[in-house]
Length: 228
Image (cartoon, rainbow, N blue to C red):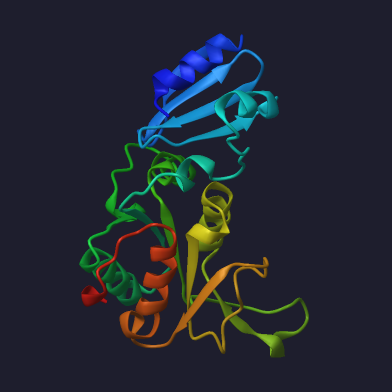
């Protein structure tokens, strides 16, 4: 269904459009209705609903299901992949090279211009443009429960955990994979049910590449198996 088709149906049903703008990832147009509903009209002919009073709009547009977190990104394929990382530069370089070999475009914050922005502002600028995120959780810090130094474990840097939470909220669990180095000695950044953890030790591409490629392929990424 085209954008014009959706506009016509809404007008005929007496559902006036209050405002219209392009989506942040330039994948379509967002219509905000006066009744509080939001219709995301994608350039590929799909659409999704958000906001209030979605049931009446769904009936007019032919049963489009209401959607929640990450709806806009879920319907759009992109070659951009956000990479969150800590202090293991070797693992970051391996991951960057692997993703580029797959024909993807890694978004790595320290390679992007800051333009005076804070970390949060840089994240807010770049993560709406990605269709998947890979969290590189490496044993960079040590910590233990208060008063129990004998239970010391390694953990990921706090900035990695922060970015993980933001990306989970934006993309949803199915579009975030956590590459966990040395899992036997690592404390997992989160125990949220359903997170994708992919362990590796020394050879990131060999040990984690195939599993990551399968997860990304399931989310619509086209990865040539010959490049894995």
